[in-house]
Length: 140
Image (tube, rainbow, N blue to C red; front, side):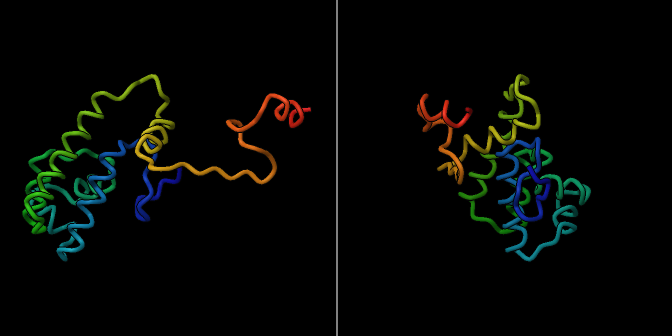
């Protein structure tokens, strides 16, 4: 998976809920006309912490989310929703299974959040649609 969070693509190995929260926080910050430095000054933290939160590489505690929503002028109901998302992301981090290789964890999480899946094959029918007879013809 490409590691390009600038274009809104998830970075491999991150929690999808953290990524979603970070995108929401970034959108609010930009809409409020605030810089990463403004947010860091407000929380009294480094700009790196804000950047990692927005990129989904670091979790955001509900208190930080509340404070950032205050700075950005987010409506109270949206702030509560984002604080819940931060708690859900933290719980997902704690419950994540170590049986899945790290490079597949993000893919599995994204797939579980997907509303639809699309597959295109120009040369043969996808595996789930193949009959035993068709599969033998393709392999032989």
